[in-house]
Amino acid sequence: MLDILSAMALGDYLSRGLGQIGLEFWQNVSRDAFLNVGMEYKNSNRFWEQVECREVESLAGKEQRFCDSNRQLDKDIIAHFGSATPDAKYYLLHYAAGWDSNRNAVPLLLLHGAGLDATSFCDVFALGYTGLQQQLVELGYRVFALSFSHPHGDNYYQALQLADAISRVRELTGAPQVDVLAHSKGGLAAWIYLAGLAAIPYNGEVRRYIMLGTPNGGTDFAFRNPMFNYLIYISGSNGVMAWDQILSLGSLVDCSKQAIYHDGCFPGQSQMLARWDEEFALDPLQQDWWSTYYGGFGLISHSRGIDAAIQDGGYCIQKLNQHGLPPEIELAVLAGDKHFLNCFPGEGSAPSDGLVLVDSVLNTDGLMREGAQLLEKTVLPLNHLELLFARGVGRWVDRQLRD
Picture 1 (tube, rainbow, N blue to C red):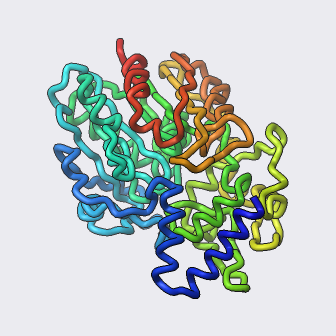
Picture 2: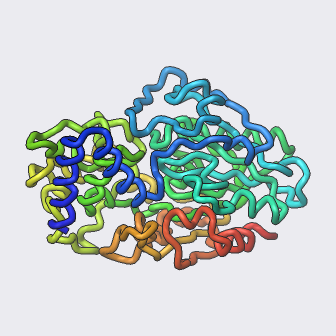
């Protein structure tokens, strides 16, 4: 791992010395490892019958900071918002074909994860796969999806956007309840709302809740895997870093805007954090492994440490696990255990989907605390992104939603 990071550091130095061509080369290498993270998407409107920009008045004036790497990139989504950096009070509600006519009367609302948007359920990163949205429409579901205004936004803000979206879907369809399917980080916004921790009360509007790759026990990925911090920095990808300073061209560069702490632009990320170092050992062969996780200066970086970041996130995972879902909700949880992302190894210190530990996804004790009914917990041989389009996931979701 030292050799890999040293090569990357040398690549950074040479690319900047060689100018724009060299820089673009190393950015492309890094972005390929992340399955084209950071690309601009065009013509996503073709996946939707209609897209509506909604406003949540209680979020008016709330701070929502962006940096160059995490603003909206989808050109059609930018057009619907009217900005690549929309205010916190806005979100988009997407209507799939058959939303008012398909045979399954209970509407299904899809929530995306960090760095994504509703189109991720259709063709994530333009990889060309048929996503869960199309699969579920073909199976007869009345599908809606939500695009949060900030790809890494505050989960409490996003819980309010979700509450408004549920109300709007019920108004459109006349359905007394909806089903909610959340991928990754989107599951925390849903948990906040359903557990009554949002600024407005939950009123029994959800029948079934499906979670795909959500870190229910929290995640320490950015701190456990220092190499990915360098990849994110080099590529300018839409990802968060545990480092707030990084060595570049012989000097420490301030990268706190892209870091996971309170003065960065990724508030929802610190809310997902939890320590897993006692369950799964850290890799001492990784560059700056100790300073990244516990805080301090390493050879090429500075980190404030995971405990500081957890505090900045308000101990969100800890609070959530003290508040379960209402007893009338039926819950199903799916994890992946394929840790390769594209041809690049992701989280490998324990079984994972490349980004989230299997044990974290399957940690449902907190969710079930109030008596919610667990339908199924399943592990499939998929990585974190394949949860959005694999045919086996579509069949699994169909089984959970069928009466």
